[in-house]
Amino acid sequence: MKALVLNALGRGFDLDEVDIASPTGREVLVDVQASGLCHTDLLFATHDIAPTPSVLGHEVAGIVAALGPDVTQVHVGDRVVGSLAQVCGGCARCLSGRPFQCLHPESTLRRPGEFPRLSRGGIGLFQGFGLGGFAERALIHENQLAVVPKEMPFAQAALLGCGVVTGAGAVLNTANVKPGESVVIFGAGRVGLNAVSGARLAGAARIVVIDIQPKRLDAARGFGATDVIDSTTSKPVEVVRDLLPGGADHVFDFVGLKMVAEEGLAMLAVGGAL
Picture: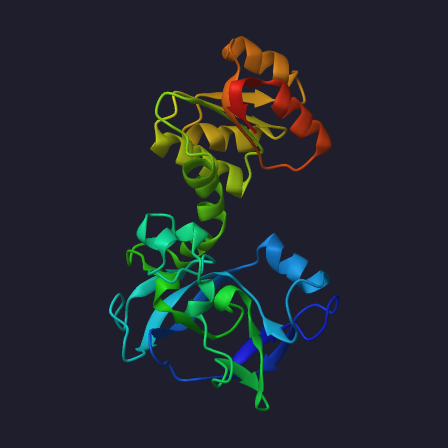
């Protein structure tokens, strides 16, 4: 099959022919229909983070084509989306409802010494996050797949695997936002908007979104923001302190600038967290 292979750091992705193994155990063979390019993929392609040669791509959606003999959760023909979270499903963290802290993520991969899932000329290729979506097909452990409705377009479904779980997960899992609490979100990009969704699901009473682009602020309202702030025309700390006199219970920085972090700290309530 054809795949985009990262052969060396800084060289970009090369379209190449690679071999993909038949599914064994709990592996699922997926015909890839859409694969997003996340900034993390670009970091992997330019920094010494993971081995090369490799097939990256961790925002992947497609159709189940074949199953390993031990698969129980999906069926041939299902539409599925991959998740970058590698979850064993059997450790103490997984069983206590914290699969995002799985103690044995390696269990979603083939063991050392087994024939690799992806290879070229008999030499194994590294499979990014156990997914490898930059290819015509992907061989993925069933614990990293979720079935999605047939009505959902593949391109939008692919985003669930990273941008959605990152934004919503920061709110629901990392911060553990409680009903009635206040949330401030810097950055209404893809991840920030999904943090808004997470805050709504958590029952936050006030969801304030800060950005520099009016279109993104409009989108934030659509996702459920109760208040929006254009930081090009106002001072965010002052506005937030007017909206939330006691300060914010939670501030999320999806921008990554020193100034934003300082403003986030300045608008926290006593006991609040950035």
